[in-house]
Image (tube, rainbow, N blue to C red; front, side):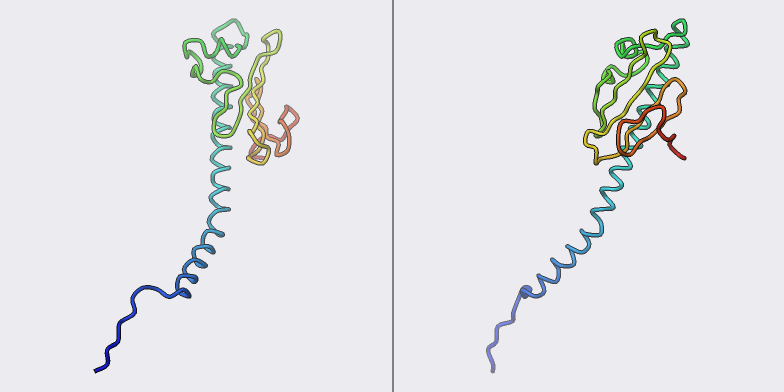
Length: 146
């Protein structure tokens, strides 16, 4: 009768193989996750730019063909939520908007907090949303979807 103890557990080689497999899966998945997050943040920024432009159009229709300031649009949450004052940050983007001096036009900018986190967006009374991958978008930037 041979008295042998049965080995239990995993050998070091088996553990190293499992760790290597997990590392390979992570190397494949993480870039896709970051790309999806960036895309979601950009979509959110575009939606907020559209919301502010729509609020400006509604203000324009209700107030003798003038566009509103941040304070006017957020007053009592009538046109946009009170948290959306010009200069607010949401989903890695900072949003600024204002009418021109005569209140006959307006601009909306959405700039990423860090330049590596997404494109820059812009719109004005034309309601065409424009994007620039490198710097603050302007009326001369490329419209999205083109």
